[in-house]
Amino acid sequence: MPSPTALRQELRFAHVASGARIAWARSGRGPPLLRAGHWMTHLEHDAVSALFRPWLERLGRGVTVYRYDERGCGLSGVDDVPPGLASSVEEIGAVVDAAGLDRVALLGISGGAAPSIAYAARHPERVSHLVVLGGYSHGLLHRALGDAQRAYLEAQARLIELGWGVRDAPVQQFFTATMIPDATPEQAAALNEQQRRSCDGRRAAALFRSRLALDVRDEIAAVRCPTLVLHAEGDAAVAVESGRELAAAIPGARFESLRTRNHVPLAGEPAFDRFCEAVAEFIGPGAAQVDGRAFTPRERELLTLVARGCDNLQIAAQLGLAEKTVRNALSSLYTRLGVDGRTHAVVRARELGFS
Picture 1: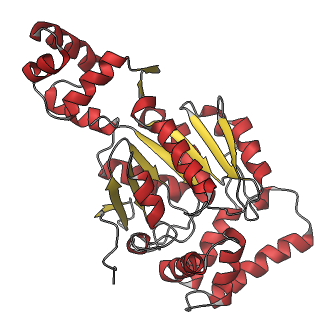
Picture 2: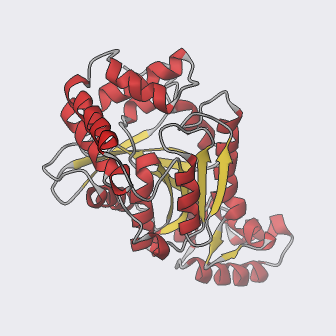
């Protein structure tokens, strides 16, 4: 049961073509940021987790965070569609549509990076920004591996299949120790529990194998949105070179390493603060753009007042302008935003983070 300190979130459901339900949640305030499905999620556990609750609370100060459970995980349903790039991209699209998001920033963490890249490449009109953390363009099965390395990966998959889903299972602890080696006991326990609650061993093994087989190298060049690639310097789960390789392949991408050994930066370490700052700076109101151009200071003032529900007279009074001047300025701004009136403008301004 959620504790009294559980994060406040709005929980809903979407559906994919098979009819399977996809659970998704929303929290925070500001421009929309969708966290793509990644390793072993559970929306309700997120809200009380010592690992992800601090993430959601900190990011939620400046952005509206959307996230979901992959099919077969957490609160989502299951179907006969095997996990992989196609199913992951379909899930992103289902949540974007269900949430009514015309454009959204995507956050792809680890195995969620490749589906985020593919969605951005295939639907450039729907993605405003792309942020990747600990990601890679192609999984280990597409790299030069010896027989011993391939046997080791298969052994891990079999261990997951046979030993997953048990409280305090050593299999889960193995992945936790690899992903967050500097975790506090509470943070490590949170990831162990997240993995245990997310799905059974058969599903977990299928997801593990699907991550190894991901490959979006043929789609990367089609990404056109501003992209920020972040990666832990001492990441033992995904080597930092994979992050540099990814950033070099995405046109115009910016790369930044984080001073941590943890695959996912943890609350209490400087890398966590830097990660949250970098995301806020990258997609926040000050960085908001439409048609490739940033808003002028006057446009930002207008958008802030529109987002607050002010009418033309109120805006004119606050800015010291004639009402006709405000009316003309808003008309031009509405055209640029692609909206046909005040109601839609309010929604769009809030999506962009003005309030």
